[in-house]
Image (cartoon, rainbow, N blue to C red; front, side):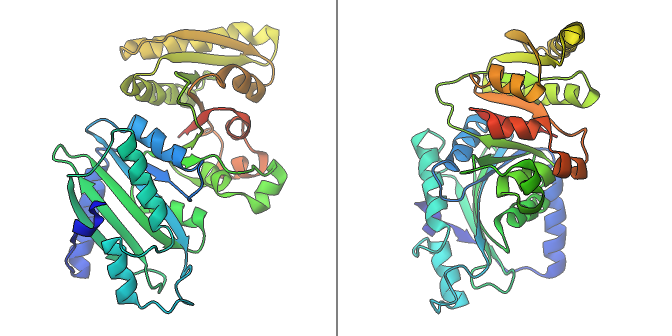
Length: 336
């Protein structure tokens, strides 16, 4: 592991740090930044695999995040701030979360996306009066790409992920499938991490599931302006990933089939104007979520959008996208 050879960042004044942060955020706006979140479960590493699959281009950065609870496993152990920090930077002590980030790097190595040999820099930020705080190692390639390992401290996982977004910005957050989904009513008051992020994140969110044997982006549209924006974004992503595209729309009744066909035709024309080929088109009839799950689960990725709903509407009424993310047997992308 190259972390022990990482160069530690020097201390800076508050004003210098502020100016540098503003400059960095502006530079990041010109890049496609993926935040892949891991929690140590096997399912969470699908986020890393998907990030690598989508992040092979020069303009894409991948940030792998593990959020640990404040002072998790440290206070009772008596570790001092200096010792904890030095061991984090040297990768010599198995602090909570370190082994999960280490395993994420091994996954990247196994699939041929290794940052070994890139320039590396480690940095630390005091936060929450915690012995370890926030720590990261950033690997930079000569062509401008970067892979970042981030160990973040927060009161809870969802809060840590949303806080990390604010430090970004990010274009896409990827999460692994949770062990269970809460029902819509219960999720209002006791939502799991994935459901909270799907509801509250300002950017696109993906629930990644194992899909190595599947292929294709199954892009859904309802003809709205926001759905058209979703088609454009997903089309570009599919084009760069080398994935065939299927455009899909649902008619709730047979009488609405003509309208659904029109939505599909418009989406195909939109992508054609962008010189992006559509492999196939499909129409479903019935409940939108059920139809999307039925027809789309054989694809590598289902693409929907819920950005026409407010956060309050998504929280209390759910959405087709949330229902699809919960019930699909493949990865699901909610475009915003």
